[in-house]
Amino acid sequence: MSLNIAQILHDDLITPMVRKTAYGLATTCILGAAVYAGYCVAAPEKHIIRQHRHPELNDQIEKVVDSLKITDDQLIHIMHILEEEMSAGLSPITHKQATVKMFPTYVRNIPNGTEVGQVLALDLGGTNFRVLLIDLRGNARVELTSKIFVIPQSIMIGDGRHLFCHLAECLYDFMLKENLLRTGICYPLGFTFSFPCRQEGLASARLTSWTKGFSCSGVVNEDVVKLLQEAINEKGINAKCVALVNDTVGTLMACAYKDPATAIGLILGTGTNACYIENLDKVGTWNSDYDEPKQVIINMEWGAFGDNGRLNLIRTKYDEEVDLSSINPGKQIFEKMISGMYMGEIVRLIILDLLQQELLFLGHRDTYGDYKTPLYNRGGFYTKFVSTVETDEGIKFSNTRRVLEDIGIHNPTYDDCAIVQHICRQVSKRAARLAGAGLAVLVNRIGKSDVTVGVDGSLYRYHPRFKRNMERCMETLVNKDVKFALETIPDASGIGAAVTAAAECRSGKGAAMVACVAGKPYLVNSIVSDEETADYEKINS
Image 1 (cartoon, helix red, strand yellow):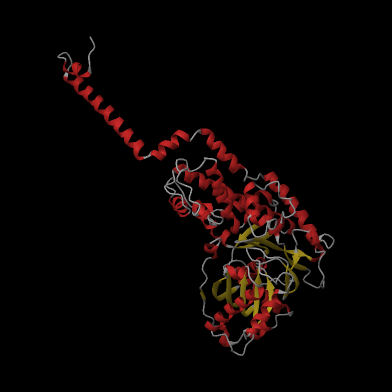
Image 2 (cartoon, one colour):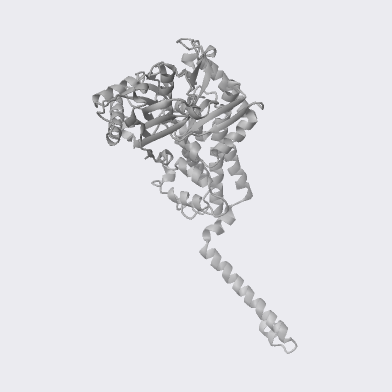
């Protein structure tokens, strides 16, 4: 005869203790079943993820991310290739066909910190444009007033005359606010123009190609200093452009004003470029005198490294897609693997690829078909998001969740956040290692025991790990008997243009108006302020 639980519990042979235990077990089973059922109803996404998140998915994700990893041996090979491309750019025989152009800048006098005077500076190097009034006080002391202006997209891709008229109007507005107009003084002006140029003199340079999203007509092969000065004259502005440098050269010069060991300049922002001090006897394209100092700063234009296909061994399908969808396909290949204009887009393409392979955001596949969300639109994942995601520590992923919400991903799981952060770290680490390998080539080439690299740019300044990853890479690749240091100077590119003009004045060559401005009592007391906002927030926005 079978017995049920109730019969057992009422059996006189069962002790009260056993009855209590049996009741407890029955109650626990019922409550446990109810809790589990409630969990499945309330959290169906997690339940689904447990069913579909197989161990092999991690291997599939890692296979995608592994395509971004570059070994030390590969970096050494890339360094050799870069050295060959540099030699091609410096040779008069191969310069025309070279992808890394290695332009002599005609900047030969490096500052020593004693330069003095007030100089205006214009800094055009990306989506932002800055106007600065710089007071060089000597003893490496600098004071400045500056203001930032935005370049509208319509001007970036429109008629070149409109661009230079816009720059002149911004300069006029700044000088009006600072009471510099119609003072009877013609202010010397340094122009930081951060685009590939063929320099023909300290204040003469012809644009060879647009980069960083610019494509203004009627400017390529034209003297940009002449175009700027014509726009300044039309506005009746009392300023004269006496020196042109790019942001990379400006960064080197600004850093050298405070640290005489500076021999390299590097920009890591919307775009990327490098320059360094080269001996004249190694510059086959040099067409000027060989007087002292027998050196010149070389503007590498290394963003174009790989335009001839020599970096294809490390490019991924995501790099290829970024290139094909850009306004200059096949150009600036190295830059597109490193700089702030493209880093966020690489991350976005990887996220989309994993989503389409059902390796990311599992349980949400049916809800993510809104192609109006940023995730599905080019440029929708800003490079500043990469930095934001990488600042997350621990398991909460509060920053990552906020970023994913911004691009249209709601209620991401822990796994989703961890994978997105992993992607961001690998993309930025690859960029830092490539930049570090390029710097290692220059540090080794210069051959001094102590070399300082002046670095500027929003990507370098605001990314939480970029500097550390670069330094670790360089420690492996730089000759062991060489000490190197990476230094940043606020407003480096703008200050550098002024320092360049002042250094020429000190040498007795050109830019003589600096001497006319320096020392006037009513010009010495400049108000120190900086209205600039971080251009990093503007990248890709």
